[in-house]
Amino acid sequence: MSRDYSDLSKEQLIALLERRDRERRLGLVWEREALEGDRAVNPDFIVLDQDPALSAPGPNGAHNLIIEGDNYDALRALRMTHKGRVKCIYIDPPYNTGTKDWVYNDHYVAKEDRYRHSLWLEFMHQRLTLARDLLREDGVLMVSINDKNDALLKLLVQKSTELDFVGSFVWRTKDTANDQGYNFSAVHEYVHVFGKPHFKFLGLELGSNKYKNPDQDPRGPYSSDPLTKAHTYHDRPNTYYPIQDPRTGWWFPCAPDWVWRYASRNRLRVGQKLRTQTIEDLIKDERVIFPRSDCVIFAEKHELISAIENDEGPVDGNGNQLLRLDLPDLDFWVGKKIGLGRPSVKKFWNEKTSKTKPVSSIFASKTKRSADNELAAEKQGRAGSDLYQLMGRTAFNYPKPLGLLSGLLKVATVPGDIILDFFAGSGTTAHAAMALDTEAGDTEARLAPGAGRQWIMVSSTEATAAEPDKNLARDVLRERIVRAGAKLAHAPAFAYLRTRRVAREDMSFDIDAPEIWRLILLRHAMALVAYAGGDGGWQEASSANTRLFYLDSVSEAACAAIDQALAEEASGAGRDIIVYCWTAGLLRNRFEGRVQLNHLLDDLVKGFFE
Image 1: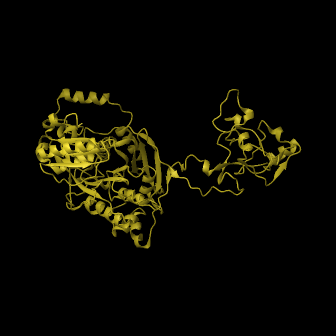
Image 2: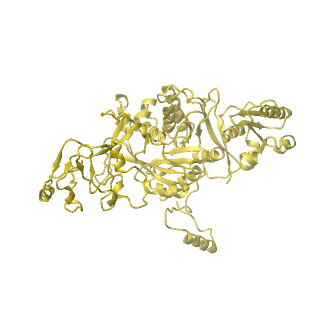
Image 3: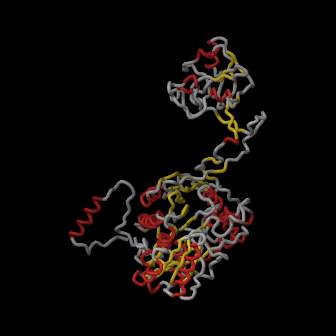
């Protein structure tokens, strides 16, 4: 498609060219002016209608959400209700391969579309800009992608969100070769990680298996860690020195390209301060493990030189010579008992301040095949096996492995965090969150409503003119969550919602009390419970810190309920009382200064149209 400029005047064309000349060209640029507009980008207000037949509320309501609809609409609604509250966003967006892998304005984007890449960038940009506002200050965005659009995606996310690039996970997608031309087999994909200023991974639990106590040290089990670090004696001359075993008198050379990790007290500069113990402190405290297998003596220097020239001198663990002819201290070793082997240092388990280790960038998904799903695995790659086993059919092409998502969420979230996936597909992200919360050792309290990881899954129906009845959100995403809950023996409570657009000027007429009540509950992080509409058209909900009232109309019954709540909180927990009403001004004389009064159009919708 191309833009028609025939309706522009000469002055308008000049202004357009001047604007383009002023734009910065360094970085990512796409043809925004020539694109067909995304119909989801419109001035309408977004309502979330609940489908009771497809929802599964628990006895205390539901914190988890399935949202059916365009994810741009869903993100606009979520920015109003969840701004700054989401800990982790994971998305597996369309890869823009040209093989009908994504829908734009109700039709698949064809490979031959001249603006296919610009359309993809604009489509993603609009959604990433909204997603950015949902993250907490310690939040993280994780995005799956393959090699084809890897570079574009990195630039796009940083342009759209200004999040910090943390790093990338690389994971193996299949076990067999896949010749994609050039005699090259691509069997990996990436998950790129972008974080807010206070984000960091939780780390992986450090196992104690390698901690032993063969010499019955009273300080307990320990690991034998290297005494060296990757610097040469030219880089760190102060940590290049020989050390001696006080029991045997044997001397151990320092590797010229892997110097000691610890300083020597004899080599400190005047006034120099240390952040760690010296090697002398460690030896005195019997924390250095010296090999005592054998030693060698070179009585004359020519013997030492001959041994070096014939590669017969002492070596490190990789077989590299520890003594070389170019070293400055060669004479020191003549006549010394030189110990063979490398010293190490004891690191005691009970002295570790952290029981975690950094997360590796190489991710090994642990999805396994079985005889029952071999056919699906052959068709879809090993990622398809989890879903095929659960659904008994090929319900979705190339879903991400459960093991991959479980691993990502395990190092980025804890129970109570909110996880969002607005390209939810088959629902692997929700399945992974549920599986983590039901791992062995989790208590019933952790699985109580709202106590586990809370998830929000957004999916369109993916219906097109050719497939008008297709509904991915209902028939695959929801179905997987229900089946996964049954398999895990922990049926999740969730609300099934649909996005609905309402013209701004019609908001007062086209939004019903249940829809307003739903948005208010989400805004205040409360479980979704049905609107009952007490006498006079009002509803109340409570949390640990808040008592929430919605008045569809001002009535004496509703005002009396607020009076009673004020009396109870004055003599009890002292929770804040927040009141939403279409006509909040009518309540000011009675309640101003005693409760927080919010006018629906001014306060609930605040920020939606920004």
